Image 1: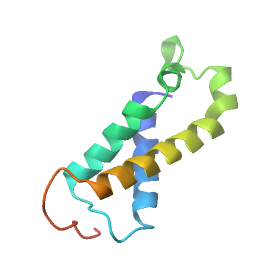
Image 2 (image 1 turned 30 degrees about the horizontal axis):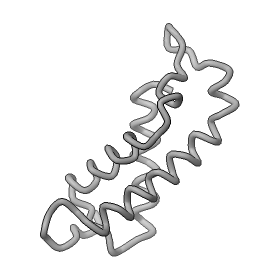
Image 3 (image 1 turned 90 degrees about the vertical axis):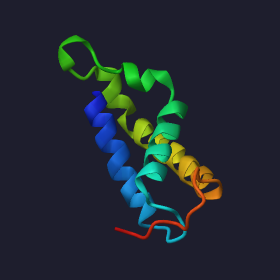
Image 4 (image 1 turned 60 degrees about the horizontal axis):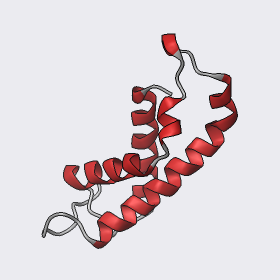
Length: 96
């Protein structure tokens, strides 16, 4: 998966998960922290699934479901971590 594809998967999944909670700050900083924490915790092999020329390798096709599940699990962990201790002292930003 390309970096753009990973970014899209993370963004879409983050929005879906945030829609399930009303108690989490949605400011740009907290969103960025959630994405960065998730990317830091993803196994490196997910970032190496692209072959030269931008073609998706056959192994990636077999692991796409696992990738999505891993991303969602790591996003949920990141959301919970940032919700418990955001890097700012303000009230949670409202839903957009």
